[in-house]
Structure formats: structure tokens, C-alpha cells
Length: 142
Image (tube, rainbow, N blue to C red; front, side):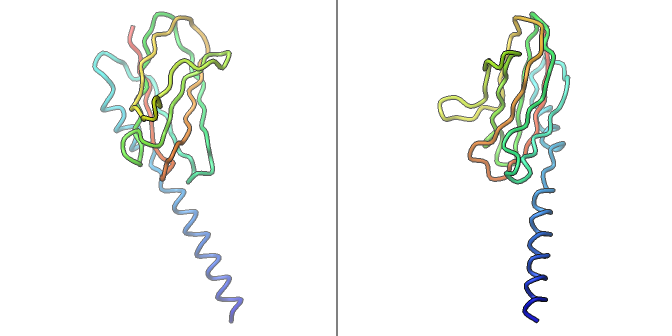
């Protein structure tokens, strides 16, 4: 009887853990971020930011940016706006160009004026996040 009870508890726990990870609706948060994209910027792409309940510590996407173009990233997260999620831009040499976390404060995004056409990386990480869930959008303006 004890073994059946233990097995039932383990199965219940695993089912609970799996459903809690599946509850990140990144598309919802991307749509919320899209509504905040500044006038004059054209939507390019949305990004899923699902840390799988803390299992994934970083999520990285590759982008091609063009010279003399402004790019804007807007974040929205489950924890309260952009709180808990940091989006950082790196160039092809992995040098940091922009970040949404400065002076111990989370920002909803940033704008970057591209100086050279090439490959860039958007890296999403979590800092003091409780949900590890959000979404982002990328827009451009010439």
C-alpha cells in the first residue's frame, strides 16, 4: 500500500511539474510587446522567451541587421512587464552592443542604430525571474 501511495505521489508531482512548465504563453506576451512597438517602426519578427520554468537559462536568436537602420526590441514578460528578463544584443564578434538591464533596473527594450551590415545575436537571459516566461518583438526603421 505504501508503494502505491509513493508511486501515486511521484506521478502527481511529475504531472504538476510538466504542466507548470507548459504554461508559458510566449505568443501572448509577444502580441503584448507588438502593441508597444513605437510608431514608425516596422515589425520584423517575434521571439519566444520560454525558460521552461528555469531549466533554460538563456535563449539566443541570430539576426541579420543592415547598416544605417534602427532596430528596436520590445519585451513583455509574465513577471510584470519586462521584469525578470534581460535582452542583450551582440555583434558577430560577441561584443555587447545593447542591453535591457542597466543600473539594476529592467527596461522594456532598446533601440540600436546599426553601423555595419552583418550577423547579430539577441540573447535572452533571466534575472530574478519567477516565471521564466515572456515574449519580444523586433522592429526596424530606416
